[in-house]
Length: 106
Image 1 (tube, rainbow, N blue to C red):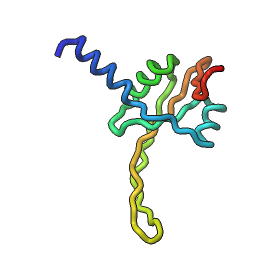
Image 2: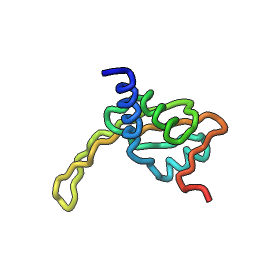
Image 3: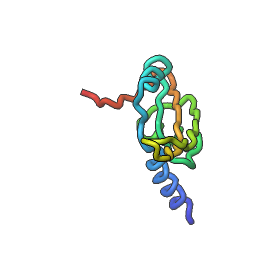
Image 4: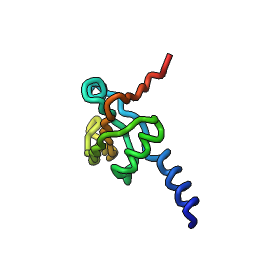
């Protein structure tokens, strides 16, 4: 592979790293008070990849990235055993002066 092909593959991967923002009470509180945003990411994502993806997609500067892996749990639904899926979350802290608005601009 040439260097331009490698860069193109790496750039395409950045668009596939972030799956969705996680919107919850805790995530909203973190966004308001500490400028941290929570994203669901692919299972093999690394901290540098998440940082590069957020900076490229949202045009912000990232201060820190923490990753949390939630393992699958066995739960019963009406006495039928089931299993929740495992997922990976990334807590992204932004530098001062930057913000992400998921609601959109008016």
